[in-house]
Image (cartoon, helix red, strand yellow):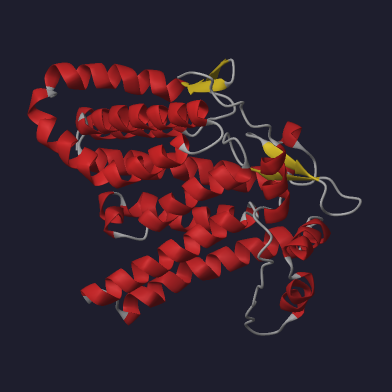
Length: 329
């Protein structure tokens, strides 16, 4: 392939990757206007929407209609929840912002080849996962000043201030949720668009998901991975050879985590944080075990996040003053 031919393939992928990456940056590539954050990606997507409307708008009416119908149940349920909530206006504003993001994202991706979009998506999240893994090594016990991205300060371990890396997302659960979806998609047929990028994301993404210590991320990853396995089994494409190949990244992940956690100064810190998640004794037994180990994790039903319980959130909601009834006729 000539140099020009390579550039014609790589350039659209890089452009898509940059847009996806900017869309993940809640903390840096953002314009703050009052109580709202406008990401730089929104400006790029809006420009792409204008190009789409001029060049392909009329030809894509059927696609827009199909997508609208498919998402109508979600929009209707969200609108109903917003109308009955105590903060109707801000919630409806979020719904409108979602509709804007959805439309401009569809328009922007429609301007590119589907394979370029998939490659850019995998590339962007491979970069995000790599940043999280690097930041864990350099700043988990030292702070955000030693990180490429940001780290959420956490004092749940007595005597130790830890910093959970989350790249440029607003907080770790946001990063973990998005990365879990990207990681799961790298296990599907979508990986055929970029096998090497998808394979790297499957390994590095899994490591980053573990290191972020986000239970919601772990849950999303487990559910989506199980769905992929069930789908492939029903389609008859699940083979022992593919499971054997899948064990290779699992071994690599276990080796990297053992090196980073078990044989470094972060062992006590991560073990203490794991203790607050409910399995510190089991964690220690796994580290000294000679053979394979299985962890059975029981989560308190009150635990919504690492720092909030169901009762605390309910109590906070009940203390919010309600707006006085309207006196209009």
